Image 1 (cartoon, rainbow, N blue to C red):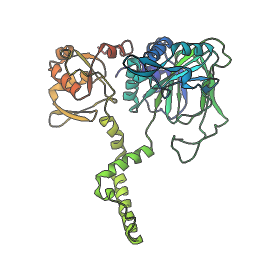
Image 2 (image 1 turned 45 degrees about the vertical axis):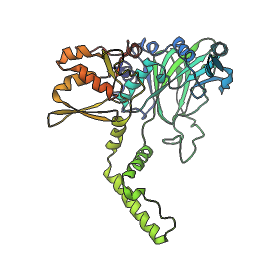
Image 3 (image 1 turned 30 degrees about the horizontal axis):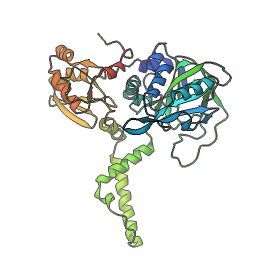
Image 4 (image 1 turned 120 degrees about the vertical axis):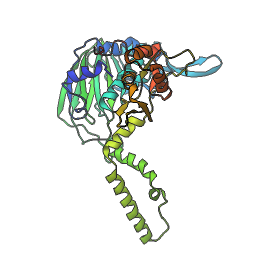
Length: 404
């Protein structure tokens, strides 16, 4: 998927691909100043909040660095013939922001097509799952106190300015569920400065940091934090535990009431089976499994109710695998599906699975292939989705120009 955010981040951080993700602190500036405001604006963020029923698990408001009770800004609105639903009281929220506050909306990509598309592009690029949170800070409010995240983050300053302090690791590769706590930050400061519109920053997992507008007076800041929870050895072992269910030996009960000798024999058998499983399972298989098997994000499905397909877009969480096979066939692996096509379909498949919205008739005209039949199959298999006007809006102005 040729999304402008990907080369923008690479140019800003002087990266060539995602290989440095999680490796080192980096910062820079987007060359395209308009890209940030295309992703999100303060007005659009508030509009998203106004039109949805949100709980405190997704929406938080802080003042003086402390979380306000949800009742401060969320109330239950009665609906005729139905139970009331929690809705943000926009008048109260507006007063809090006027006073100076930090508003945090988690997983904005689940509410907004533009950020859904941006996260999908970053997933195809990094081959890891991505979630984006929005942070709007007004006046001279403080944000979170000094803390660390259990995932790598890419921060894009969209509007306004905010002061940051970044420190290094206190514990190598800390985790949310860990063997030891990680309670105290190191003294050494890696970077201290101001993020301005277009600024980009990469903070690896475990680096302590904080952001604030204290002592800045009037004004506001809006930034997006894209989170990348990369997979670890612990994730690999957890996945192997799931694979072990294929072996009958490891599905049997532990012989709790048998003799000491019987349990010792069973432990040896379990150990041998576990060692053999690790030795015969490639890390590449583990990495590829999620990419090929994960179901796609939510999308509108009409089953042709409103007419034939006009335009589609590939909506898999990761880029589909397209393999040309020796027998003259082409295999597509994505979203838990493995589908075989004739090689004649390959030019159309490359367009339909590019990650760019495409018109079915134009694919057919460009390739001479029955693109309508291919598109219907890919939609049925949840690899592509019908391109609604709302979803199409998420691609407007954020894709790189098509190669000629």
